[in-house]
Length: 320
Figure 1 (cartoon, rainbow, N blue to C red):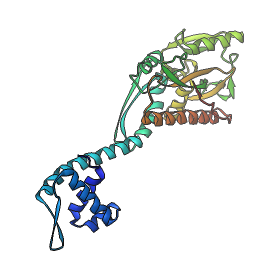
Figure 2: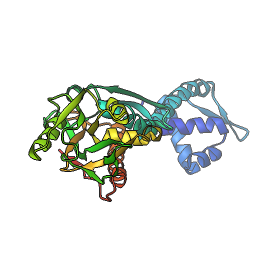
Figure 3: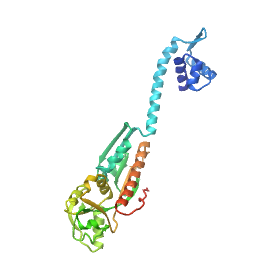
Figure 4: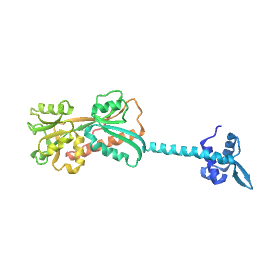
């Protein structure tokens, strides 16, 4: 047999309406076209589907039995169409995101929350891992999207890089809070919270102090920046941290009363990247979320420019 879905659909409409003319209007075809389609279907099946009695179209017993099977087929097709529509509009499927600690507490959950709104059948996973672990998770295709500190390029990972300006966090009651920007001279010999010694940001910050001939006094060593905000608010230290930590703090307005954020000069940057598997085709959902994440990063940069007192354009992403 060689009949089409259109023939099955048309047959069902004839059965429902009991009329070739009514079925033709429903399916948007001419009456002769529908009659021909039913006749062709009967030829493929090898039995009659309808007989005419006193001008009326009467289904045969075989037609009623065949209709049960057609309903099953068409219901399945309609379900597939709904699924395809949801996939196309990113409302179904799975999205797996791995995120480094600085963004995992507030920044990434807020973006993912916005993305999931109205997508009840979209399953999502969000985990926090160190940047080097995230890189391996993406390279091995265990996750769809990674957000991490910028790694060295490798073929198994596609990356979109952003250069984010670091900011200085100062107690609101400190005299330095009145400064427009902070320099190594301002913090010469003063207590500073830093990440572990091998972290690139610690290395770059210490180098900036040394080039300025200033003492870099490390008082607190941290694994992530978030706890340092409490130490700064208490007046225990100062901190030069990544933009995402500062921005996340500003988003929680109630936590910023004891803190101010200032530019640090010379500029110290830190790289973050959106990572996707290099040897796999990115799903439509993953592409859509990548675009939303990219937009959120650019918005953050623009808002921080305003917060730090200087208007400017966000640094563009650099695909690799």
